[in-house]
Image 1: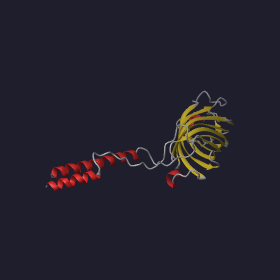
Image 2: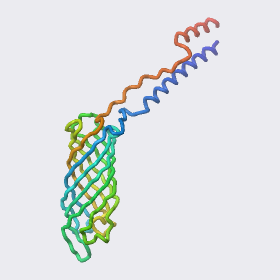
Image 3: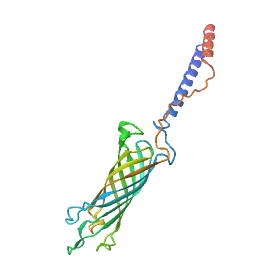
Image 4: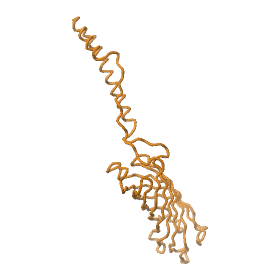
Length: 254
């Protein structure tokens, strides 16, 4: 009869373990917030501002003078803390520089066309928790893309390449106006080869910029917290009452 008790106990324990395991798998399937549809939590941004150029000290007459910067982008927040965007960043300035060994210099406008992809991290939501109506969010980001330089007006246009891979870091400030509209302040420093300005391709040039603009939120604009999962009940061959009844009968046979 002890064998019957052991069998009944094993069945009950197995049923409990299966139920707990199924419930745990369901709870860990997704994170704390629901993942929205493809075009939910997306945004279109446009901004304008200023940029400059910082060259290596070996190019003493090549330094930045303020110019116009323009940025257009489309992005999506995958979670309250992580997002991505694709965009175009245009820069125009009047940097003074040495064009050749003869020391000929001039103030010539340059156009930079930066096609980029960015990974965004909303540090406000990560540290302080997600809040849909927070007024000011900070989102550092890493950027990488193709930097194309319009050098058709420069004397060395035929001696240097007009495109380079570039990368950089930035800080996106997001100021909430309404549920659909945000004001943005985007600060970025881009690094690329100095061949964009001179024939010295071994040097690194830095392109800092600051733009202010608007971002328009599309689709669903908020994230819903993942609701608690109702515990999964796994059917067992008998109820607690039936188990107790069988246990009493087994005890009576001893």
